[in-house]
Image (cartoon, rainbow, N blue to C red; front, side):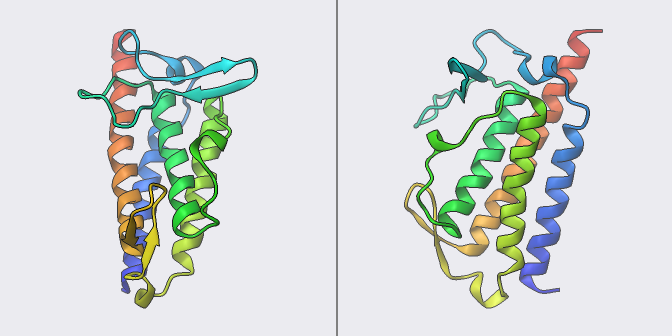
Length: 171
C-alpha cells in the first residue's frame, strides 16, 4: 500500500466514524448548551450566521455545542483545502455558516470531498512537497492530511461525548 493509499484509508475511516456520530442529529441536540455560555453557532445579524472563535484560544477552552463542533470541523476542512490545494484567497468570515444540522453536515461533507479529491490526485512523491496553511506556515502535504485525520478523530470523539451527555441529561 502506498503512503497516499494509507492516508486515504485512514482519512476515510476517521471521517466515517465522525459521520456515524452525527447520524439522526436533531435541532435540539445541535444547539444544546451543556453549560451556560457554551460556544455555539448563532445569528449575529438577520440572516447571517457565525460561530464563536478566538485566536488565541482561551485557556481553558470554552465548552462548545455539537453544532459548533461540526461547523468547526467543516470550515477547517474547507480552509485547509483552500490554502494547501486551492486558490488561497478564502477567509473564515467568507464561509457561509449553516444554521441547521442538515446544512452543517452538508458543509462537512463538501469539505471532506475537497480533501478526498486533493489526496486522490497526489502521488507519494508529492506528499513531501510544502503546502501553505491558512495562517501562512508551510507544511508537507502529508501533514495537511494527517492533521485533518486527527481533527476528525478528536472532534468526532467530542461530538460523541456531547451526544451522550445530551441523552443522559434527559433521562
